[in-house]
Image 1 (cartoon, helix red, strand yellow):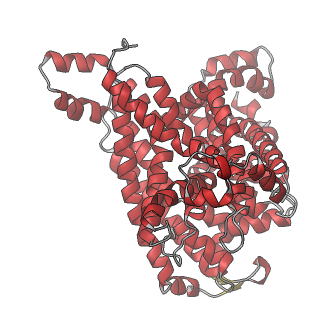
Image 2 (cartoon, chains in turn orange, green):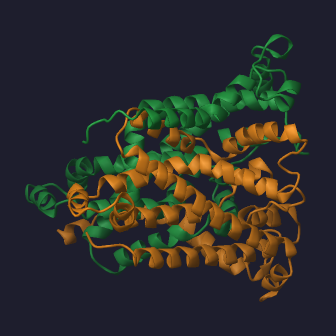
Image 3 (cartoon, chains in turn blue, cyan):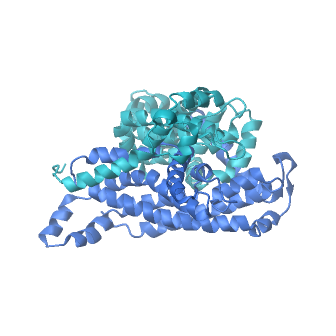
Length: 280
Length: 277
């Protein structure tokens, strides 16, 4: 069978591979190369060694956005997952209206980041107006504003994954535990939580990368205001590319660092939580 | 299924929480009928008397933007891209799972790799390459979406294909089907539920995507819905909140309608997609 399929490679393999080369492989390789070059368009690139990386290390806005993003990611991963898990636990108890509530909580996910940013700009500025403040008063207003937005958007998504995970836990485990006289908190910490580790792995991974790579919401809600202090990494990179002439190479170098950080975080997170998964 | 218990307190608490959850959307729709100056200052009041402006904000928003054109382009790009991604990547996934060899291994490894690469890493060279290859139109961007979306889609389809029983495929081949017939007549029907999953994840991504189309598409001719919304924020950060509310409403309503119509599949698809991740 392998032999006859192999003869059909121009149909099965070629279109995707060509698009993959255009949409990913070639831009990725030239991205690495450009990070060691100075350029304003691709054709006038000249090799400058590590210069871009040295300039990047001295760029205080980049260092600031790095810490800002790290803190934002930690806060969001914790908040979103704790709330999503709690909601999922309650919604699997099977009381009246659970399906409707599930539908409502998931809805914001269908709405895109740019649109979400302006919706929440309206709501949050409306509330803050009572205290004569706006979202761009200090960077922390933007920070918590973005956090509220992300919770509103992502809790529903993670909740769906947690519900699927909780429903997959065999019920005889619970019956056995109650038979042995386990308390509700023992059941939660000894059975429910360990048995939902696969879902926790996925959800922490998704929230981690979503928060770390956040762009649209940041652009629409505060656009980095005041004076780039509420800028997350992705927006900082974008502004370096398209807002500062002569900094294109530095922007690409920042993007390489960004990629390495995202890659390292994904690998690390997967190793750490997978280790805690129990065999079913 | 466990029996539905009657727990009025939980039902009440969640009803309140649900109202809080839908409130932002409700507020946008409500404010779209209010006069500009009232939106910013009193976003939580009902449009009455002098603050009510009827459809004025909609007229103004549609005058400022080509919203319906953008909506059309968004629909076209999303539908065509998702269809192309589904067919091409499922074929590739089947090929690299069934045909063992160096090429298959390399493609699969590259897909895994592509999944963790953030868009910012490739955005600059990609936009230049797309421009050079004349892909900066609604049909050309489909190639870009296929290329950048291939990683995740192939990875997911590979997981699903491994569960397709090979005996069925072999039987079809023995009966005289060539690989193409086998794939479209035997494999695709088995893969259908997985196709729905991949389709939903990709629809959510492409419909809402802002950065890729803004960089790839020729902005003078083609804009998508998120681009139009962002465009409403003027060059100096000033926003016409009346037009903004109206255009946000026009953006949200179809999405919510689509969601309510297909929510069963969407929620199931998201849950199924995560298991493989």
